[in-house]
Amino acid sequence: EGFENRALIEEYAKGKEYSVEYISYKGESHFLALTLKHTTGAPHFIETGHLEPAPVEEEILKKVKNIVSHALNAEKSFNGEFICFDLETTGFNAKQDKIIEIGARMGGDCIGSDLVRYSTGYDFVKMVIQVACGEEPDFTKVTDSMNVESVFIFTQEDLDEYEKIKNENPEDILKVVDYHPENIGKITDSSNRAGCYIRKAKGF
Image (tube, rainbow, N blue to C red):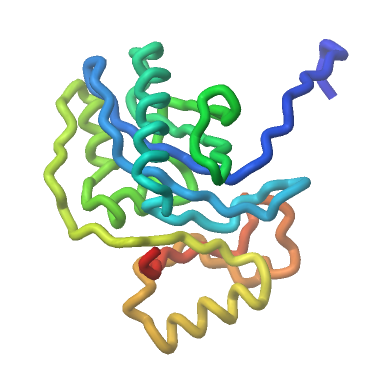
């Protein structure tokens, strides 16, 4: 469908998908969170939920931080970063695992706006605003940290699960976003999911 009559062919990356959140200020980058992302898989890979902090071993997390810090040092202009990884179960390997995307923004789908705050206690939104205004980000914790996950509603079963939690354990639901149950059975992509709720996650 392009005007140049060319096709871009990319290598297929297979494995678990993660995003990494950093905040950068005057050349110094600070790790905030690693998120495990769940998707529908091939062929559309629509995200179905996120888990934070991602349940990975400390050694793997250390490797991720090293490679991300190296990438950010090469791009001084980046403030808030969103990076997707293909992390094999054997751990992060810089030669095999891939940095899929990097952008000067918070992670979308409630990652930057909510999950980082719940899982770390840091006000990521405030930090981004401060950096945009030329101010040093404030790392004062505004809430206790917890295991948290976002769950996107696609099917009637998903909706029933949400209603069950809401009725039996309402304290576990922290936030509800874009609730449109009328979209059940009509979902084609991320833009018309039937809703999202953020809940306390079990320990891992």
